[in-house]
Image 1 (tube, rainbow, N blue to C red):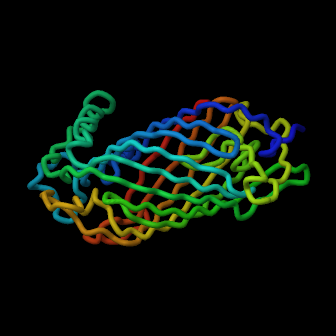
Image 2: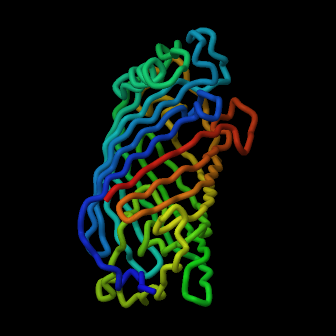
Image 3: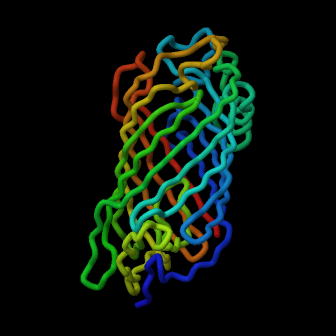
Length: 326
């Protein structure tokens, strides 16, 4: 069986391209975080990588058929957030990585979320046309800085040195005039067929490369090498190189969310809400990886984000699909 450790895997520097889409219509709803679209390109270089991303997020109240004056005073405001970002990361020890992202964007009519949602509803899905965008959060340009650290806490290895399961912790904060929050999360993975480590396989994370990363031990301060994993012979589902189930739970302390509270530097928005400062997000999904392609599908939920609504652990749910090509 061929070794697949981060140090021994053949490295071919190059670009990867990723497309993510989030939507709740397949679950029979169209509210809150209604739609998300993100495209990214990144390039690896040894144990480091960098890239660019752009995207749009659309937020709506619970009934998009209502005119602005008919929206409940406890409902979520209409809001859009469009952005472009630059990010870079590195493996700084055998089982951990640090990622920084710098984002410039805008909320309000400048995000073009209204135009995007109306086009999506009229040309892509059979859904009512939203009527309340006149009451959306108003224009404000935003600058964000985000730092994320990922560390593997534990793993289970079979007698034949194949990886059965692992557990990773993520700590993260972002600061800016649109979003300011800090979070801690845990990600568990269990193989279906074959599974590799976070940094010698496809791993998990919105800003982590699909291709293996080589750790330069001299630059990493003498960190120990990752264990020598092996592929599970004949273990691939659907002829995949990797396939696994994953679960993710994240607790977040929120200081600012302008898509709910309105602009930080003005009060032009006609309809805003007060935020809850504690939010829990969960995700459960499946991932398949072939030589140059990775496909993922997951179910996501988030607890109540506004003080005007009763607290629920799964206040809103949506589906996420993403693909990576290298």
